[in-house]
Image 1: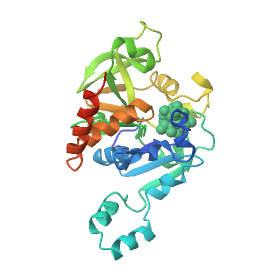
Image 2 (image 1 turned 135 degrees about the vertical axis):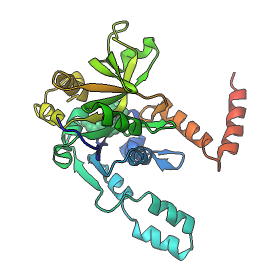
Image 3 (image 1 turned 60 degrees about the horizontal axis):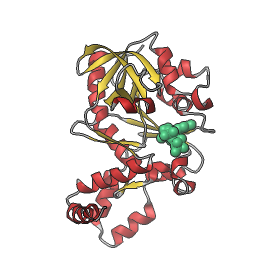
Image 4 (image 1 turned 120 degrees about the horizontal axis):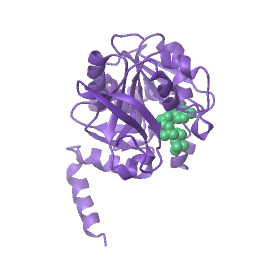
Length: 294
Ligand code: UTP
């Protein structure tokens, strides 16, 4: 097990996004916009806030636009320059990652999240790393991954972000079992993916942010299939839990699952209401819409 700073983050973006067909036939779900930014931008910003220095994208077929998004667009930029659109130019340069700080690798077949993470093994190497599910975007005072990195500096080992859910919804999620308190979090003593109703060991669900030790790659190497005949990250973490500590970071902000239609729409509303330039209009229209509901 290796200690030290978490410098690399893996973004698995190779899924098919079937819940968002037909849009995802041509547009990766990670590029769908919440207000005016692609979903992936929110997640990369969270990683930057947490001090991440290298961004590893595990892409797939039809995802090339993600790589283009994190590059310079000369034609557009020279047109903006010619038209003195300085605010727009500043915006584009503010979101451009530092040269050499991104890597793109392909998951040739969507064999599951665990498999997508395993595809990043050579780029990550032998150090702890973060995994951020790009369809989960978060709104909180302290960025979720920032809180996790701070906890990891104290706890070492593996850190998983968790949130509390209503007990009757626990069967939808990966749930952890709670042990002793550690800093802002607690030791994880077990994990179960989608427990049968009433059997959950707690109401703390895994929300899509992980800091993992590189030994997870050795476990994923076995390519063992789990639920849905996919290579599951939770199965690999359960095995690693027998050898290493896992600590839960209790995230207390709001998470939007933009991979689901309701979560995507709610994220657009919530982030629009946060924007001083459009808040007034959106709020007025929203109130009228709600008032007209029967
Ligand atoms: P999801 O199951 O939410 O994404 O995986 P999906 O499969 O794209 O969506 P649906 O269910 O068909 O609508 C969570 C994250 O893991 C990535 C996805 O891109 C998503 O960001 N993923 C999933 C991979 O990169 N590879 C996979 O084989 C599976």
